[in-house]
Length: 69
Image (cartoon, rainbow, N blue to C red; front, side):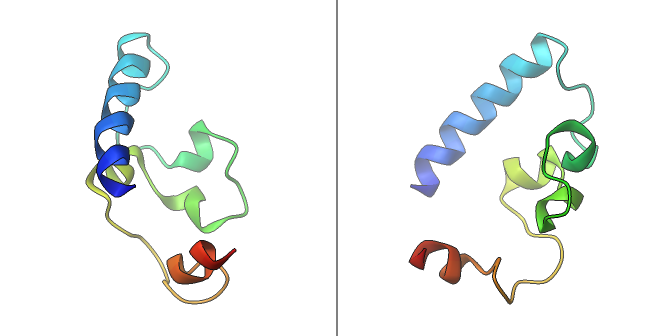
């Protein structure tokens, strides 16, 4: 799943940037997408493209807990 994401996501971001939908890879996603009030609001497109984390990794947003759901 992660390999597919690493291929598809950069392609979609590139298309969106070419269309002018995104102009800054370091803008918080909370400003660009409707992800407010979640841990993702402070992530950036650069974090998604490099698959790096920001913030805490425990609790209901922990990747293991999400996979179980």
